[in-house]
Image (cartoon, rainbow, N blue to C red; front, side, top):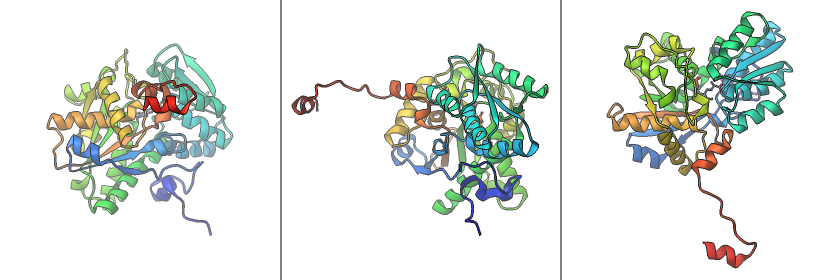
Length: 359
Ligand code: F0G
C-alpha cells in the first residue's frame, strides 16, 4: 500500500480528488519569530512561510488541484494572467502534466525570478503593454472564446487547494499551542487566498470541527497605491471600485481590480477582521525584519508583517492576540528587491591581510 500523502493531499477529504498533479506542495513551516513578536508586541506571532512551496509561492497549492481538473476536463491550453507567481506555478504544473501553457505578464513589472521560472518550464510568455488587470481581462476573453482554460484564482478549483493553508495553520497551531490563532494576516491582491481561507473556516464550522467563536479574524494588507479593498471597507464594505493606476515595489500585489472581492469581503467582515494599507517603505522595513529572523521573503509577503505592525500601533490589534502572518513568496523570487533592501557587497583585493583590514 502507498504511504499517506504529505502536504496538500493529506487533506484530500476536503478536496475534489484523491490526488493531483503534484510536485509535491504544502506542508510549509510555521516559524517562530521571537524578536519580531516582542518588537511588534503581540502575545504570539508565527509566520507561515508559503515561499517554501516547490515553485516558491502558495500558488502551487491551487495549481495541484486546478491542473488536475484541466487534465480531467481534457483541455488543450492552460492560461493565466500574472504578476509573476501564478505564471511560475502554472508553468511548472503545466509542464508536469505535459500541457501547453500560455502566460500573460504586465511588461516590465514582473520580478526576475518569476519570469525565469516561466521561461525555463517552457511556457509561452506574452508581455502585455498594460497592467495585470488588463492581462486578466484578456485571459478571461480567451477563456470565454474557448481558446484556453483559465487558471487564475477566478477558477474555483484553485481556491479549493489554497484552503489547505488554513487547515495546516489551524492543525499546527493547535498542536503547538493548544489553541487556535486569533488572527491571520495576509497580503491581498486578487483576494483569492482571503476567499479560500474563509471557505476553509466555513466548512470547518459547518462540519462541527471548529467553533464559530474560534474562527481567526481575516486581516488583509495592501500596498498604499494598490488598495481598492481597503478603500471599499472604509466606504462601507459593499462596493469595490477598480483602480486603473496602481503602483508598488511589491509587484506581486500591484493589482487594482481584486476579482475575488465578492467572496473575500464577506470573509473579512464575518470573521471580525479588517484591511489596512502600508507604504513601500514599511514593506521594505518588514522584509528586513523577517530576514533578520532568517526568513527570506519577497516584498509582497512582507506586507503582512508591515500591516500587523501598523494595526498594532493603531490599537486595532491587541497586545494579547495570537497572530499568524502569511508570507506568500520566497526571497529569491525578486532578487533585485532583496539586493536593494540588503547591504552592498564590498570589493577587496585577493589577500588575507587586505580582507582582515576590512573587518
Ligand atoms: N503574495 C504574493 C507573493 C502573490 O504572488 C500574490 C498574488 C498575492 C500575495 C496576493 O494573493 O491574489 O490571492 O490576494 N499573485 C498573483 C500572481 C496575482 O499572478 O502571481 P491573492
